[in-house]
Image (cartoon, rainbow, N blue to C red; front, side, top):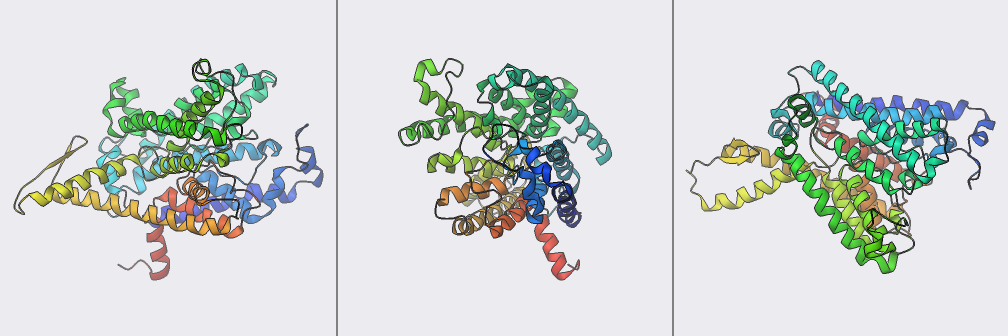
Length: 473
């Protein structure tokens, strides 16, 4: 099953690249200039970049894996059909990730077995995969429709949206609701969410992104039993909410400390953010506003961007890299290592220290998230979480070292680490390295990072071994 998952995901991305590649090749030459919006500073549609098959495959892989990094740097210049295809593959891919974690990876030896057995899979949505898929789709569609309505109102209320036709507002609300809930991050506007420069839109997007980062069995339990207390009662959701608060404060402090060096270039200017500007001043409120939005965007692995992150301090980039590396809850649409793995490793380290003081014959049960684990079970869960996390981090460090040598002298190691964490964590925010002019070796590496990050490493290793040595043990 892991081999099928690994091969199937790559094959899906390969076939999904055809609309990009074929549209770019068969579109009449006049289309490339006709698609360019009036008043912009570029002359050709970004569709032209998809004539390169590597760019087309990159865009498709980024979409299906929910990564959000893009070769279509000027999204409004893309045909509506391509804009819709980008949003659709992220939306469908988000459901695919949930089904993947439910049915494909939930077996011993996958590196995810302890993860799903220990957390989301203890409360299955339904016993059968078909019933689970049907229920997940119902929840996903319901959340999407609600998100579209809320975003439509918010975009229309913004200064930017007030000048747009209603159909264009609806189009943007639909696409951003789909890619926000699926924690994908593709946008149909230049500059992602920064185009709007609207605290209201950014605030509305926070719960949409958070919904996608919560395990879907938790959504099912809350909707079925109408018991909101289950939100705080779930270990991963509880830690996700805590990390939202603590991380946003830490990043805000970092931004405020770096403000003298970055003011005017790194943060989106706004007159007010719920009255905060009147308390701490304009530049300070900008730094706090951007910290809150981008921390949630990074931790939920959504990848919506509202500020030029390449101009941020190295400290801010490293904090966001940490958020992208960890990610949200297992059983949701996010990438990264996952909260439950981080929790399991922290408990495992405590367990390893405490067992030093116990006799070998001691019978000890450890309670974790309401489950009592024997010594053997704890060792297994700790080792599986640690192995996957270690492999994930080794790939992150190795790829970032390679990237800093390929990206050019204008980028620092913090930029390279950030960009690899964004690709491998299936996030999509960027310091400016990713684009059609990037080194093709770096682009190819990112294809691998996105694929490996989505499948949680072990299935890819199993696939590679089977390709080299066959299916024999």
